[in-house]
Image (tube, rainbow, N blue to C red):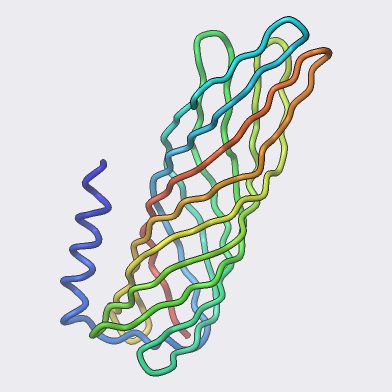
Length: 202
């Protein structure tokens, strides 16, 4: 699993030398599939006790769709993109505590540079994700959290209208405080993702 991003990037770089140039101008849409790793730090506090938990880690599969508009100027490519995705990532322990993210949507900008037919790019954007947390049988709640997303990737043309891309994304979310009676829980989520997407250009 850990070697997959490296293998995909090497494959895309190799394809970039012989692939057909995709039209990096205009609108594009497509599906994407990848893997998630969530890390949620937490802090518990009540009148007689408090403690920190370094991080509850969980892995899962994500799938979604994206669409955007891009402009090519020389070897530079500038894009504005929207996406929606769902995730299977969920952490739970034997004591009944669990946390998961269900779905996300966001907006981002890409800035890239074409080397032969391979587009190397960086990404910066905003994401909103629905998280759900439960400590059975004490409580079960959900909330939408905003996050800042950073990423980098490579895209290469397959035909005159299709391109394949692979990217790594990191999202840092705002803290979430859940209060129950005299106790409070503060959650600080982060998410790492590797995605592969197929874009149709028109």
